[in-house]
Length: 112
Length: 111
Image (cartoon, rainbow over all chains, first blue to last red; front, top):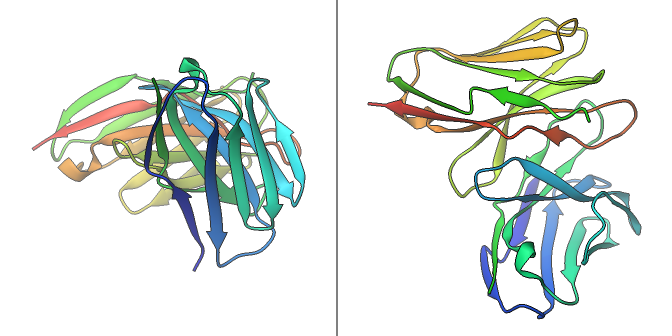
């Protein structure tokens, strides 16, 4: 069966420090991959998505970046975190149009 | 924006009652999906309804879609305390565009 792993579950980082969140998918190949961010009590904001290795589409210009070095690996990064980067980060995969998304368990990031 | 908007923002009901949540969106869609999120967890896909469908059932869930009104509803029958969660609708548009999520309805089912 297909599974998605996201880590770490929680992270507290100082302002100006780097960030690397990793997401991996098992049991499938060539999935569409997504990074969303959720502010407290709010909906999901799409940050990045990828339809293939090395293909990244950015939805929100900011100090975050994403990479897909392998088919089933999606990484969210920042060189210098801002306070406004705090939130709940969710990775997801799908098979394309007409399919539901499978979400990871999320990473709670607090920038202090 | 094609973002869905759920209504109400919060809903509190007694166990055994039915819960109805509504979603409105702005542009044409390929399909509309509903998700559930327990506090502090990832979202779980509940049901997908295509633009050419009007109603769909899955267990205690019933989803309707009215493309002329650009709206959908999610009905949970005979609610249980375990149904307490936030519920989100999500829509996609032409092509392989990612899902856009609404802000969700917080459902509390009181035992």
